[in-house]
Length: 330
Figure 1 (cartoon, one colour):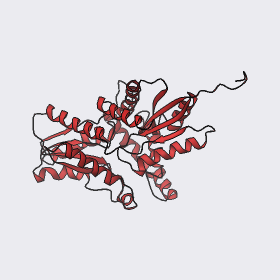
Figure 2 (cartoon, one colour):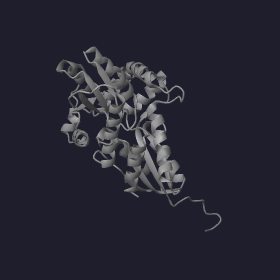
Figure 3 (cartoon, one colour):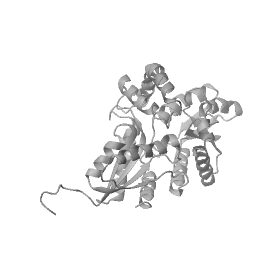
Figure 4 (spheres, helix red, strand yellow):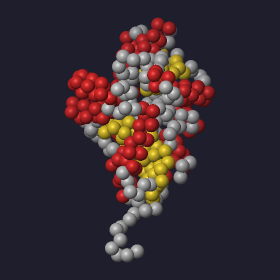
């Protein structure tokens, strides 16, 4: 090679695990910035963009940041100055790198919204010599509003690269045996920790508008498939599927988690466990919406015992699942 040839790093494989995202802090401005990016995604909000931008900027981004900031303040990890989702995603990447133990395979993490961005991390991996790129969106159940928008952002980044890496994307893993086993193990662990018998286990997944399902989004089916497979592994207590986090006036996938919490005590189900299989890390939707708001609503409606089963986070069996998924795509 000529001495004046630019230095080129090559021969490595990059693994990028990608989660939804998080604001940089609980300040109003950081929350607003995060919400603006998230709610401007046309995969997330399928409304005429001209009309939606007026609604978003004049109304939602004026009032919602204060409410969202309050929720984040409830669960913010003050000692680390980051959200739980950021902490666990970073930890997952670190533990996965250690578990793989290959110097030619570089593991990193990114967020679809907020920091660190997908673009910055792909460019960083490219500079480190990654000719191959494996992308793992941390959504077990594929949906256009989650997995597909991650893919969109990856493709947009690659479109501007002169030397593109060989790309593999892992689109979903809702029925992977290691994933189902890890969920089952988390249920058993929690049951062994409590001193009361649950009447029911509620498997709460993030919702999507029903019209997305009507247009062909497979998410609803993947969620029910996951619950069915978990029930086959753990049949001691009935597990039901619900959908949370609805936004706006339109109909979303049902049954709604919050309405279910209000109704269960009246049906004699006063002792419940809740698990969120679609979330790979605990976050504001699990720690605040379910563990705080959901529990308050359930108890107020006549419930007696309510426990949230933590997400798989950086548990050993979760990291083993990630390693398995990556190994299949090397």
